[in-house]
Image (tube, rainbow, N blue to C red):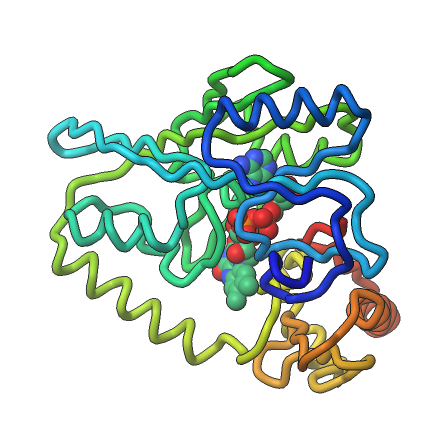
Length: 284
Ligand SMILES: Cc1cc2nc3c(=O)[nH]c(=O)nc-3n(C[C@H](O)[C@H](O)[C@H](O)COP(=O)(O)OP(=O)(O)OC[C@H]3O[C@@H](n4cnc5c(N)ncnc54)[C@H](O)[C@@H]3O)c2cc1C
């Protein structure tokens, strides 16, 4: 999975598939069920840590990538497949004069991953955009209004339930996002500004973005920095010098390196601040 995750870490999946349609997803899920293989749906692999031992089941990347705009005058509904790049479609909407997604500039990954984890930054998030989502549950398609996603900071009903779901996990297929009409020049300028800020803060190298969620009213990055952990290394994994909530793969880092570093950071922050840091990234 080193080739399919932004961290470039992880042992092999027993089976790996890339699929481009609902029909294909349904057939794949039926096959996994029939042969008794565990299945995980993924998007861009930008928020995953796959263990060195790999995954003894099927990892399937959903890549359907169509979208359409329903123009309502001052507003619009963007109906977008889960495999579409979040930042890519945000830029496209801005250039067309549809606002609401500017915050997503530079956030890697797909619409599916963003809907799943309530991705957000710079004052925006998916919870504020999503109107409804089409999900494949078992072999049926269901339309969920945003309320059913039970969104909270970097979490959703789907993310909360992931550890308790047996059988085929739900697959996010299509999201309906609410946008507003705005001046394309101003929207593009706002995104350019965010791009510059992100560039100044984002470390070089392979990572998964922020490793830990921010505890309410606190910044994980600041606590890690104040604990003196910037630059701390285990093997080839390093707490970034530039942004303490990032762990960077310096080249050839293993999942064990990262997990040991995570444990070290959690233990140090617990001792110094009495705070338990919760993972934002999903470990497979
Ligand atoms: C440099 C960098 C910067 C980042 N900055 C931010 C940021 O500012 N804000 C932020 O919120 N995140 C940030 N991230 C994290 C990441 O970009 C987001 O979490 C993103 O939404 C993950 O999308 P993905 O498609 O890569 O999901 P993946 O990593 O592929 O999967 C993440 C989870 O979503 C599930 N999933 C994915 N697609 C589907 C689907 N179609 N149906 C069902 N489940 C699905 C997977 O099972 C998994 O549990 C950053 C990451 C990097 C590398």
